[in-house]
Length: 327
Image (cartoon, rainbow, N blue to C red; front, top):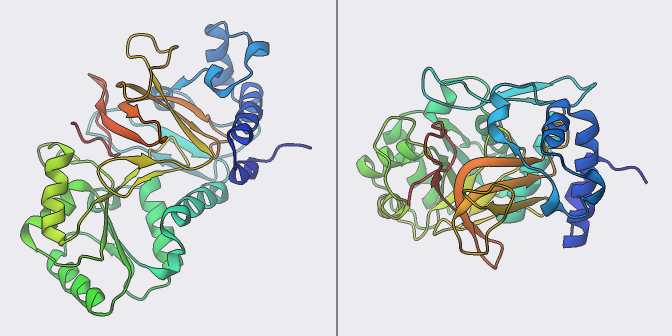
């Protein structure tokens, strides 16, 4: 039976994941010239690759300089990363936008249930100011599918947003506020809301607007400002088509079609044990027409429960807009 990209959404076991990962690896070797060349340079014996942890991981920085799309595929949309002025940003040509939509919708529903149960509010001013944001695309799709009259984006209308949140609280409406870190801080410090049932989801990133602070301090300010017990987080990046979520304390859970491996800082071809800090490698099997095996510039740890934590970035790594609170 031939493999289809959507097969990854049917994964229910470690064996399923490994089988799908090997299928995707073979496809991308044959159809993604940049990845094929990289694997050749590593002198990888393809016949000996029997498990996903033997698959070579492509440095995510190559999305800045190469066209990361399969042969014979055209991009329906190109997502671009955020960054400071003067920095080269990553570009992710997406061959099948419907595959991205299926990935983030299924991923959201696994953690939060049906999207039409919620009012979805996006507080993403820095992202809305530019084009090509995969985060804005995702949040806009969630807003549209929530079908709630008050779902939508806000820029810096904090007073209006506070009034809306108070109204939604009075209506006992399940609500998710998805925001970039600096905007959530501005809101929490100047327009206090007491909405214990509100889900506040930070996507990370000060965007150069404010000084970076440790996650514990950030979440303390946000819990106080919004009157909630925990702060949720979303972890994703331009080069991926899937997201991980945290429901508190900075501990993330991925999707069944994702896998996090932690590589040694000084030897990228070896992996460290649970609880040890290292570089974050990500497998995203939804990323079928691009590269599913990425060595990121993030530092993190993985735990026996398969939860993982993001601790910061390697020195000299470019500034990015994803969830990168320094511990």
